[in-house]
Length: 489
Ligand code: SF4
Ligand code: SF4
Image (cartoon, rainbow, N blue to C red; front, top):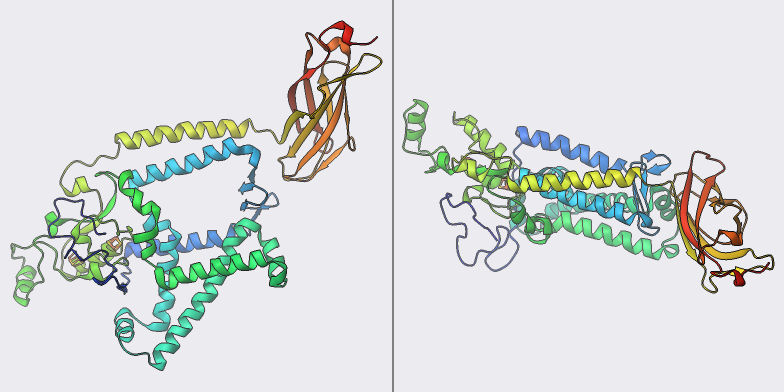
């Protein structure tokens, strides 16, 4: 729904009670948008950013850092790799802090820069505006030609053009779906699956077909409705922004009263005669270029994705009529209303303070994270047993995770209490692959003198034979006889 939150903007936002969306007819049918690209300065910057992001998206699962993809979200094994750092299920706190950090940085970016993500970084905008629409223009021609053809009958020319476009869309969607899935299964696994029959990997085959279908449907048909109807970020942005957030805005103080100039008025303006008119020449270029089909002159609207196309379109018009650029520009609602600009506000300070705290916690957690994670527990059953010679046995269960990116050969010793022996139920050296977890039972044999009131504080060390610098310790309370009569001589 078109929402006008700028009280100073003239004109009704909703033309009639029936108008619901800028891309919907009164009878509820889809109103197809044919935005004319405005290739101004901002468009050129966005083009560069878009292709850099596309290159990143394709490269990240391919580029290896310490033998692993730069980003690898292995949901199956609950391992998440980011540029050489692998987080495991045992790193829940770290993951939680990381996700909170991402969330709060989104809050901060939105409070400061409004919908800059939507206009510059969101895959929906990037792929639609810089990949799918250019393909559409290539096969179906410019906006007016497409509009005329779409309004007419299904001629062979129309069928061929649309067919070719959709075929390329499908191929692209297929490629994008594979790249997307590579983030979750890795390219190597993906290539292996692709060389096999679908019957061997029905789950993968269905998932890939569905992802391809979703991408194809989204960019082929759903398009701007993803932003105006479906995207949850678009919905809650209004609570993250305030009147000082940066938005793409029309300056009604300068533009109104708008009027399409007559020949005489144009001549007068050329001769520097001051007319009682605003700078807006009511050319409609800002509306024609808008990918969500709105009129920015109606004020801030939820459908505006901040793509800056109307800025480029209006700047070009302003240059052609000899007026200063910036009738539509990046600014804030307060500045438009001639109030002072404020970058530092309570919410900005609050988000920044939370971000600093979370970053500190994250740094502490990362630096205190051990390369070998040990989890120690008691085996179900008798808590201890006393041998003939009085020694006490505790049966423990070690869960050891190798958090490094290479195989480790690990052994366990007891540092405390003195004289304690650890006998693993398997081989004394555990060969644990990178990222793998090994579970093993152990008999811990403790001298009876180590116990006071039925317990003894123990300290175990796990050492890597092939990486002596890596070792990890874990403390545990061993149980034993509380009175001398329980121990046998
Ligand atoms: S109003 Fe302007 S910035 Fe907003 S979506 Fe339309 S063209 Fe882009
Ligand atoms: S492009 Fe500029 S001059 Fe033309 S209608 Fe839009 S705001 Fe007015």
